[in-house]
Length: 166
Length: 210
Image (cartoon, rainbow over all chains, first blue to last red; front, side):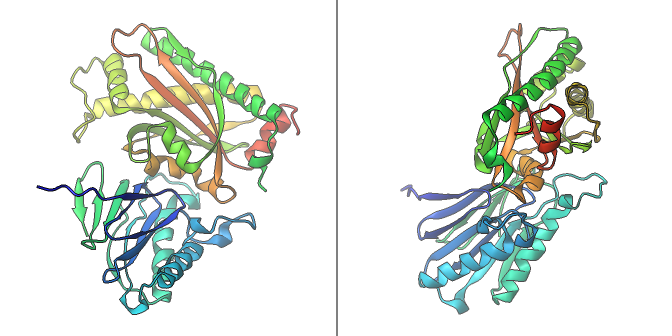
């Protein structure tokens, strides 16, 4: 069998990257963070965002990192895709992450950040009218995700429950 | 600009001393617990990006065993004691005598997990009490939580407070080494991650204003 070497584009924490077929987008070790893929399969173009916090109004500084927050990263992601030739009506999204890694009773709101990230990402997708095709969110495990433009599948790997594709 | 980018060399040195006091005490506790000689390296204070922090423990999706606790009190923050799964297995064997403890396929042996949690509890507790005495602030550890999962998934939780203010974390990192083991020496990382508002308090108590 011929093994095709596909270039893997790594997306860091609070980072955002784009890919064209046959490249693969990957982000590793999502906990409460949410990985968002927005793609146009016909044009073979996709972007992946590793969202760390729900809302940039949480920031205590003005020169904030826009790639860190759902409300600022997703517009950058979507608008860049459109500029690169993706068609708005064809855009679709898949998301994974938003776990609650730690569970102990505390008033610390930061422990719920996974759920809030998930909600914020969904709200942004709705605002842009981008259908959310599938999701794997919540729980209490870390996830490594990989999106293949060839198949449109998002591969999700966890430590204890193996791999799945959505 | 956040305070992290404006720290002076003297302030960083002071933080190193904070790590020294805390981890020195923890190393002594560990030595007593295992009845072995335990070494520790001079703590490093690292100002690192989030991705770099994951690289310190082998990469974002590297599986780690971590005992996490939230520090409450006058200088709040987060603390992690991090081991690799094989290192954690060695600790458990030495502490409990359970020879077949493994962290490869869940479910894991309850007694072994409990021993790891207790290990983290003892080490973090002695680290914090030394620190609390040294900087003369009251610090209370939360109940320690044991996790075995991907490094980034666990450690980003400790970066949440900080991430609202900065893209960098100040990590006070100490590596402890167990000596005299026939096999490979085992290592553990202590990561102390004070919340942003704790730094001025720590510096103030130590007489290092800027």
